[in-house]
Structures are given as structure tokens and as C-alpha cells.
Image 1 (cartoon, rainbow, N blue to C red):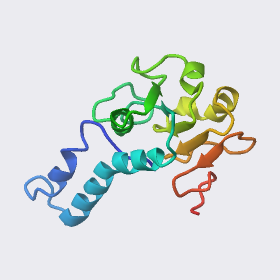
Image 2: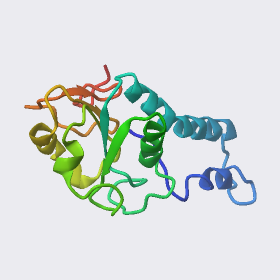
Image 3: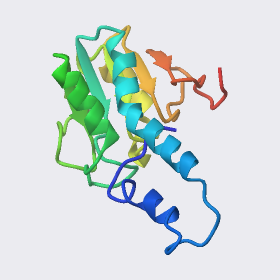
Image 4: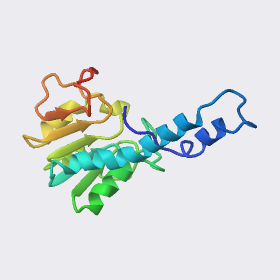
Length: 168
């Protein structure tokens, strides 16, 4: 699945390695490795998107996790900011927050790369909107592997998954 964010992520792993808080055996090296991997995920994803040399990227979902309205420490926003800093036109769409555009058709219009950045439950049928509003030849990057590809008109990259949950 995609990267994690929010308010608890920066502090909770430290609590698990503190013997005064948690008397269970822990593996600090594992916690540190997973935190580093998660912290690098937005850079990795942005780099993969930039390899397509997009003219416009639509970022679907801007919050830090599924079905919330909070964008604090959001990996999706970090990805969008990285793309913006590289001069790529980006537009964000998130039905749960006022950030970004409120119009899915406008967000997808002209986007040659579409990033499904947050797995909101309202995106369960997002393939219909993508097929309807995205230009032909657009590539969908689904970091949560939630898009149903049956009848899908766009190119699909599930970041290591084939779209049906199977590793490539």
C-alpha cells in the first residue's frame, strides 16, 4: 500500500522503543528502517512520475489517510509539492477537504498522469471518472492498488501490482 502520514507517525515508533513505556521486546532497527522507507516514499513516487515527463499531473487525494479531511504530514501533498517544485503543472482533487479543486472533471481534464494518492472510499469507482474525463493515453499510477482495470481506458501502473492485487 501507499505511504503513511499524519500526526502520530513521527512520535509513536519512539514510544515503542522506550523501555519505560513499552516493556515488550522491540526492534528499533526495524522501526527506523520502516520510518526511513516511508519518509522516502514521496520522493520515490515523484521521481517515478517525473520519468513520464508529464505536462499535467492530477493528484487524487490530498489528505494523510483514507476518509479523513486532515492534510497534516500528508505524503500525497508532499508528492504534489515535489512535482510543483520541478515545474510540473499539478492539480489536486480530494472530496474530503477544501484543498485542491472541487471539480473532478476539471482536475482530470488534460492530465497525462493521474496519481491515485489516497485510497478514499469514494474513489472505489474512480475508474469511471478517469475513463470519462482523462485524455486518451493518460497513465494512472495507483499506489494503493484500488483501481479496477476491467474496461479501463488508460494505461495503468500499480507500482508493483498488476491491478488485481497480484505482484508482478
